[in-house]
Length: 264
Image (cartoon, rainbow, N blue to C red; front, side, top):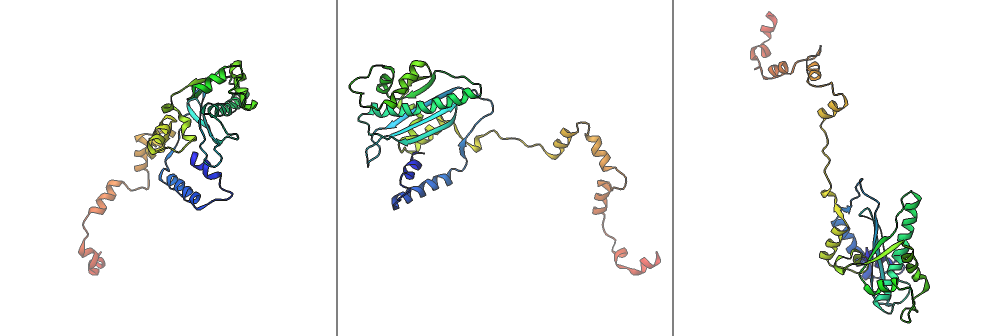
């Protein structure tokens, strides 16, 4: 996800390095055709989210990258990887801006669920920065946070109203980390397992019934008696008679001598 978003930033004026990166993405997609998301029918409507940021990840303008993902009933339904519009001066500010962006997406999903009759409140948002959590729970604007744009402070209002809850999570368990930076194979596989991305081969196999079982399901009264009727119906040849006819040795005199045929 992060690699695709980074390549999309240079689609207006791509270079050779960007084309090579896109080819590597295509190779990855070709090598994992069975990897996907599994959405079971029986699941609840519990909503939670994860948010993370990469401080100064962009080497050109030193802007951070916000990453977030939302789970409905334990299944991944929404995710985002976007470069922040402002330059953060600290890791706490970058995490705070990312949390505010995730909060806006959660509030929108909460509104959509309310339209369908599902009322959810105190939605947990997991963040791996204790400083960003402390800023969001403190209603007082200190001198160290006065430079943050006012549009990112609406997360405090939603916390006070009880719409969301901001909780701490360890960096090793942070699922949104895959949307903010490039990771190695081991880390990607671990996050994919945590996000419940399952291979199509791991899905429960559906055992298809045979033709005989399908006929019995359509008409349960049709059992062995029906097969006997089919074998012994008028005008049909019994399988035993066909077998005896096919295994009977040929008569060479009867097949080659015209005189014997004439006598008959």
